[in-house]
Length: 193
Length: 279
Ligand code: SF4
Image (cartoon, rainbow over all chains, first blue to last red; front, side, top):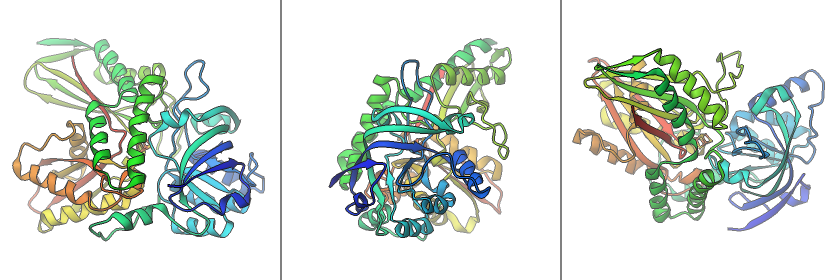
């Protein structure tokens, strides 16, 4: 498996080499947001206001961490299911969002939209919140503080390990994986929610 | 009549809530290791290596295994010769609240399903109490993550669907869930009873120890056959492809109506956090 290094915020050119299934280590600044923060950002946009964080070139990490112990900066901080944020993606991609980090599938329209806007979806191993937390260097709440674990945080990470889920060419790690290893077929469509 | 003070229930629930989130059960770790040995897909093996490392980090660094520390599902089996001194429900509630605060766990419960205000201390829990003969008092706590719970399904099949229909449904549920349930998963399969109870049968199956076959050989065989087929779907650890999609499948059944075949598939992620204690 190839391992790439990716700086965040992201320069367009850095995404050209990434292919679904590649390993990536992300270093730099991310923003965290999950269900409730996305809903608020969507409401802001609908009312003609800009979201409270810059989006151009940025990376959003779908996470709601556990509370830090005294003396720690953060608790456990693994990814949550990405597709719950799918309905908010188009508006964010239009504002220049370049990468998202989560777990699980993205829906076909979002995979298309990412291809169109040349953005990637990165998969962190779901449920490894303890391990991933060790790659987080600093955390600061920057918006929607009242949302608690769902507030938007600015997070500095170092060599944060992910796998490319969807690349800018429409490649999809999950589809390719199942295709390669399936010995039986079932009549089922992935649930994108 | 033996009596158990409510205070003891509260403390036990608190301790279990904390313990399961920091210490992955040994049978799960062994299952990860076995899966890593048999896994043919390189990214799949890599995921299993990370799961083992994550479990070690959780225990040694005092970080919860997963940030979704779950809905607390508390399953009490109370002997008919045991009396609880004080209010049982309240004790369980307080135990979960204390465990969440003292264990630095995440409050993941909203007070109302549509108006969605976080209660802050992960209460209320889901509580099941069953009576049984004798003077034993068992408390089991499960921290049920929502990623896998969201991918669970219930269907009212017809008697004519039989085992084939159940097989089709189970495979469909696992395939539809794919990576979202954080595989390798464990599956609780409830069969029978009525609409309301079949889901609880499925959840109850998840409380049984990993690999503990149904005592009825007919269902034990069905468990093995379904598990084998699930692992031929190719989903693999974290959905990156591979042979280890599920670690176990356990069935619980109950009698049902002549016209009915209720089936519930409760998916559980690799963060299968459940522990039982006796008071
Ligand atoms: S599904 Fe399980 S392992 Fe995955 S994020 Fe949720 S609780 Fe954690």
